[in-house]
Image 1 (tube, rainbow, N blue to C red):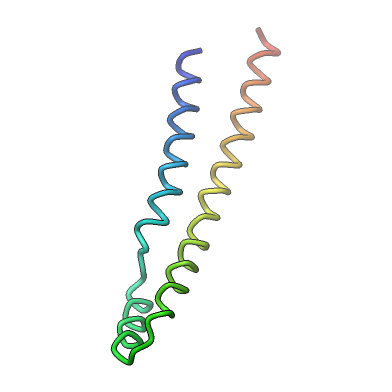
Image 2 (cartoon, one colour):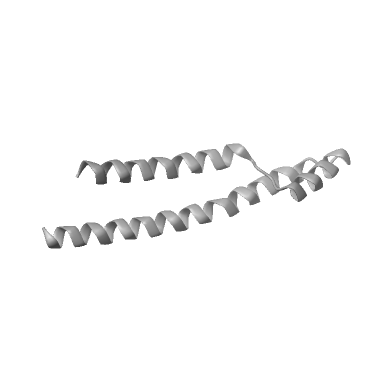
Length: 85
């Protein structure tokens, strides 16, 4: 019982941490970085914020998908364990 609580807590904490880190990291691929650097040299700085927001938007969905699948798997195994007990 403690193992299940610990694993679900760890999964939830990891998911929440990834949400905060994804927003703070503002990671970029090499092509995006090259385009943004060239735009910054020409004086356009607002484009960088839009690209970073787009990257953050795109990176959230795999984590949501994995979290949703994990939640339904947890609920399925929990239901099966209660039925067998």
